[in-house]
Each structure stands twice: as C-alpha cells, then as structure tokens.
Length: 229
Ligand SMILES: *[C@@H]1O[C@H](CO)[C@@H](O)[C@H](O)[C@H]1NC(C)=O
Ligand SMILES: *[C@@H]1O[C@H](CO)[C@@H](O)[C@H](O)[C@H]1NC(C)=O
Ligand SMILES: *[C@@H]1O[C@H](CO)[C@@H](O)[C@H](O)[C@H]1NC(C)=O
Ligand SMILES: *[C@@H]1O[C@H](CO)[C@@H](O)[C@H](O)[C@H]1NC(C)=O
Ligand SMILES: *[C@@H]1O[C@H](CO)[C@@H](O)[C@H](O)[C@H]1NC(C)=O
Image (cartoon, rainbow, N blue to C red; front, side, top):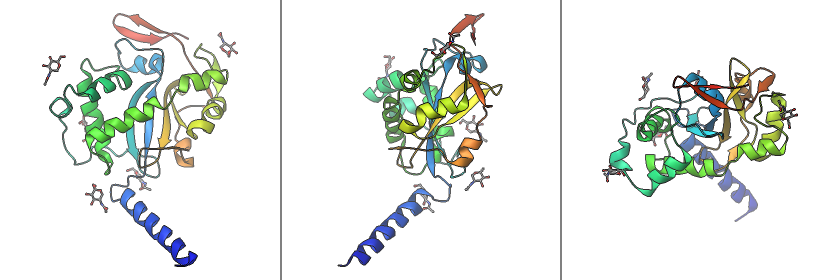
C-alpha cells in the first residue's frame, strides 16, 4: 500500500468527518460563553453573583458565527432525565444560573434554545462537555497574569485578546453600551474538545469598541444589581 493511498485514505476519512459535522443545520463549531457578572447582572437581576466569570452556555454556531437556535429536537425534561444525579451537582458547581431561581429551568432552556442545535450530542453528553470545557478555563488568572484586573480601568481590546489568544485561541468579546465587558466567547471545535481561534467574521461581530472597561464590584440596590466602576 503506497503513500498515495494513505494520503487518499486520510483525505477521504476527513471529508466524511466534515460532512457529518457540517450537516444541513449548518452546525460548524461552538462558542463557550462566559459572563462577567458585574456587567451581565445590570441587564438581568442576579442572585449571589460570584466575582469570577460564570458559564452562560455552550452554543452551536455556523461557520459565520451565527447561533443555531431552537432546533426541532424538542423539549427536554431536566429533572426527569438528570434529576439528582451527580451530574446535577457538577452543573450546580460549574454552570450555576445567575438569574433563574431553579437552575434546572436554566439548563433546560440552554438545551432547548442552544444545545439541541448541534447534531452530535445528546443532553447528558452535552452538559458533560460544557462542564469539562468550563473547568479547563481560568480566564481570571489568565488576564491577571497579563496585568488585566477587574478594577474599573479601561484597556485596549487588543490587550484582552493578546492575554487570552495563545491559550484559548482568539476570543470574541461582547460589551454592554459598547464598552463594559459583558461576555467572553471562546471558540471550540465541533467535537467540543479543543479551543480554536474564532474566525475573522466572528471577531468582527464583537459588540465592543476599541477600549473596554473591566468593572469590579456588584452592588445590590432594591433587589437589582449594578456594577461599580
Ligand atoms: C449562518 O446563519 C446565518 C443566519 O441564519 C445565515 O445568514 C448565514 O448565511 C449562515 N452562514 C452559513 C455559512 O451557513
Ligand atoms: C431531588 O432532591 C430534592 C432535594 O434534595 C428532593 O426534594 C427531590 O424529591 C429529589 N428528587 C428525586 C426525583 O429524587
Ligand atoms: C426558542 O425557545 C425558547 C425557549 O424554549 C423560547 O423562549 C423562544 O421563544 C423560542 N424562539 C423561537 C424563535 O422559537
Ligand atoms: C444532521 O444531523 C442530524 C442529527 O444527528 C441527522 O439526523 C441528520 O441526518 C444530519 N444531516 C445530514 C445531512 O447529515
Ligand atoms: C487597575 O490595575 C491596573 C493593572 O495593574 C493598573 O494599571 C491600574 O492603575 C489599576 N486601576 C485602578 C483604578 O486601581
């Protein structure tokens, strides 16, 4: 068997793999979306937000970075399916809802609106993948190491990108009002295994301007939570 055949074989197998992963839904890869509570919680009243990035979701997107929403894979009964299993404890720890009083409703929503838009994983596997990815990321330490602290200072967006891109690939950032860091999206391959750089179109779709403020505290007033600069 010559090298020519081997090359043919490898190309053949990888073309099958890409047909499988890029099927009619247009699914191409994922965003691991993490919220920065001092800003995220301005829009949504939160309960007990920690001062760390919090996993919002693992969202399937197409190759131009549009989220694939509400597939026809139907409703998901979290309590009936996952109930009180150890997976639930892992989710509570690594994927707590900032907003819902019962996180089970949040995970159901994330599966129904986002998770079901990918064709490769069933709910249990999807939740496990999200947890595994979240556990493998420590944005806060990564940023701190590069001197980027949540202290209300504003930084060029390129500082955020440079601090994270060697470890997690080029991120896509979203901001409130164009300047308050709201969420960091890290791109993940279609197998939900490895971080990849977000592509040019995804990066261009940032909602942040050239400088980003990284606010610190969360202050509760009348049940609503605001950031302090
Ligand atoms: C991705 O989805 C958006 C919105 O549905 C669509 O406009 C765009 O053409 C899609 N891109 C690809 C490459 O399928
Ligand atoms: C799950 O645990 C909760 C509280 O720990 C309890 O109220 C509920 O009955 C349990 N549900 C099942 C299906 O075991
Ligand atoms: C998608 O699903 C969510 C939650 O299940 C629902 O709130 C929303 O209205 C749905 N959107 C569309 C466009 O069907
Ligand atoms: C896309 O994925 C779904 C779910 O696995 C599958 O039913 C469907 O046949 C796939 N479509 C193509 C064109 O491969
Ligand atoms: C915030 O931290 C940065 C980096 O250490 C520092 O340059 C800046 O002066 C600090 N800003 C405030 C308001 O403490």
